[in-house]
Length: 469
Image (cartoon, rainbow, N blue to C red):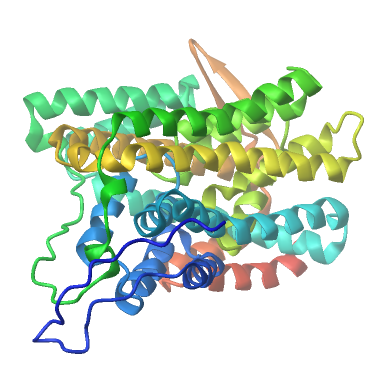
């Protein structure tokens, strides 16, 4: 049986805008078509994905007002995980309760999952083919420039004063020179923000949440007239939601531990990516630095240059950029399949990593959404978000440096100096074709202001002949 449609309380037609009459309830068939369309067109990272959703949900469908859309977006920015996917889940939840949120969030992820799974299989099956090698060569060069652009974009948003610059520098030093765990950096930044808001709010309230003042909008929207009893806080419902979704999150991990043992790659990946899902504040690029170093240097799931390959896949397919975890999980199980066939092990690992990455997103929305109005009104969280974002600049800068070292140079060493340990390249091992292609990518992005997909297309075409040099 399908869940019931939302109850709509019809009001009068707006006299100034007679064409904007109160809207009928959103049917499940229409919701399915719309969320599938958004999922298939969710390219361009969170900015492009949110723009697509705004165009469809606010301007075309009139399911949600601009004020409520921004209200939901502001809350999703305060949560760990991909804000665009969580925003889709939030709106789906408003329209059709829990099942609506599941539909919206799942269809946002599913197209990217299928695409990256196909690309991962192709990568392990045809990586030795010259043309495929050239394509991957071009992807690496372009993604390196894209990550640098992300540092600049995030930095412009938050590095507004000396305190924010010092936080970003401290985060970079902590993770690059001292291998400080990413969760500790984020926790310290949040604590600094909470204390800073108390003593110097002028320095620490830098990230301003978007205005949701839309009182002058004359349009009628579906969510404005919906029976919103399910959006009201309820302690019993919250406890029930937490129990159900934590069960869905942790039960498969426990089952894996019992089935294959705690030393198996499936169990290790399920635990590792569960931890990563909790600390993805500040966008996917922030946790990618932590993930890349752990996957390469600690677990051995990836070779150094392969994180760029995975990023290239995620950049060119629909869905959240954090979907790159699927490629990491696939490669880890493919290289250590145990008694399974390597491709089958990779497919199972893709499912496992995707599950533990996105199940927490549903938990945050379904358990926390009714309380978000209270959370949003607290300025201390704005200061904490500001400091977290400043720290993320330093973390993403670390990712840029780490990727550049392992992409532009064929030999990189670990250097131990007093109590610090960091990577340093053999300058004579620079790979000139890759460096030249990375320079072309930077020119297209920073000078000509080309988009991601257009830049990737050019670098892939150039990468095929250059990879043969």
